[in-house]
View 1 (cartoon, rainbow, N blue to C red):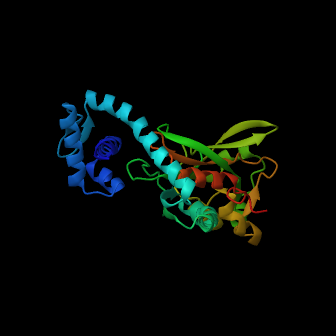
View 2: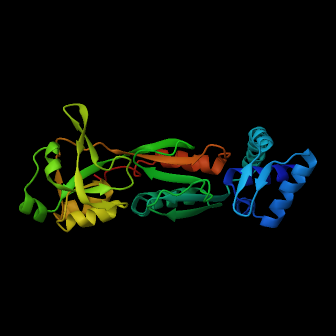
View 3: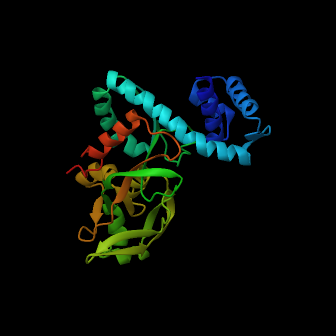
Length: 299
């Protein structure tokens, strides 16, 4: 077991470029993790890591050893977990990151249902509208909406989130109602700073996808903020339907281009490629992918 602990300590330090993060993930002190790595290097007779006061980097020998020991650790973890799962229910902690609005309105209720089925699983849910660093921050599962930009993570699509383009009656009375998505170029639009192309709004028109160029003074990282600005009559917004459903029913916002629906956003689960996917995380992903309420338009 000491050899496994040494290998695991080294792998976690290498993957996270941090003794502190590795210690947190192992539930050990940074001092002990440092000793594990030093003992491993002594046993092998080679230096695996270059250390400075500010950084940790792999040596050539360390990169070779990491590539070979990761599948061994994954296999060991899977062996232990399979044996445990034959005898007991799922258990352990899942660290989850999700956008604030989607997390509170859609993800949290789904997690509550998952938690009811698996009472021994702890769910640590962190809301943030910034793109968290999954590996560095020790996240097991990140839920993201829109284009997936991080190629270092594995991705599983959970569904597609309906989107609407909308504006307040006051804005439309003051500026006029655009009759076609191409007219958006003449309007004030709210840009989503999380998107790779915030000035390109994509619609399906006559069976074909078309990107409309938009501009505006407002840039938002949270769709709830876009909905609020639109409801105040300042600009036109493109929002997930869950953020504006109530405002549309109350007449505070008006949906535009119902015959030219804006293309939906992908909702996906992201997780590290080089980390063993535990049964509890895999089971949660399956639960989310099969939950019809996660990405529905509420109608």
